[in-house]
Image (cartoon, rainbow, N blue to C red; front, side, top):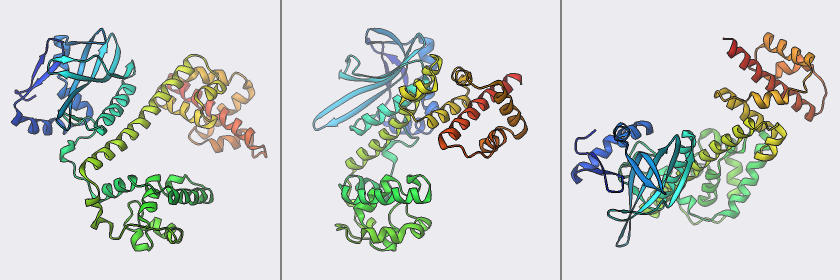
Length: 396
């Protein structure tokens, strides 16, 4: 740690970082070069915090701070300051945001982004919250929480500028027609719609309206393979759409997006990304809670509003990650006859547990059952596979 950074606590028990102004940029470059966990270890002075039992009075609780970073935003003649923190109290983690009203006066906590015992969920909430604040124009004293490269060193390439400008425009009518086309192609080719074209790619088509294959090549995401498969269809669809933009796009788009618009858009994209990640973590927590409480698959399906097949896939992923999902597995297999159970175990021992289709044929044959019955058979195989793997691990 640079000797000019000194851990110090103000009268409220908050960490203050002191440095000479000339050292700031050099120091931040050094500190922002590592991954997020390295960033925490180096910036937070975590060992010093624990050794000195650094605490902050937040919301009426004496919480041990393990991370603190200051943010600033200049709005006209007013400079706003705030802090983002991660703290711990008796095994319970907290992260959130608070404003600094005056130089030495802290406000009460403005926002608590997460409070609980899951470090994974805390980090997801932390990143989502930080991205939101940076979208609002706040900038951290020390960067590196979302990316290794500090924000002032990032240079937007032509692709980012094209995406940003397109997202700023309203082209809903053309985009809706393109989404209908994509849905039809998805059904025709039996693959996910995003593999044909993402929402952002459709938005750029709707905004820039390429009318030749050469112009289509300038749209990010449309390379040789996509153009060969879908180029003629897309050009035909866009023929009657009015356009206000000229090609080549890179000749004018950089002057059409200012720095403030670009920064706001970038952090909006990050906020959405981390919001989805946070949603995944929260869904996992809810599923684990339901399993521990003894819920059945049917009950979990209703509580989480999740299709049964997708729910089974999530349970399998939890098992692969080492979580205990046997309570729901055992509950669902109670109705399985001992004969059927032995048949599935024998099939897994003979064919392995990697692929389900050979197991289905081995146990149930090439029957002409309806789709619902086949899904039920797959469900039994999935549950038996989880139990088989657990028993095998325990034996080892």
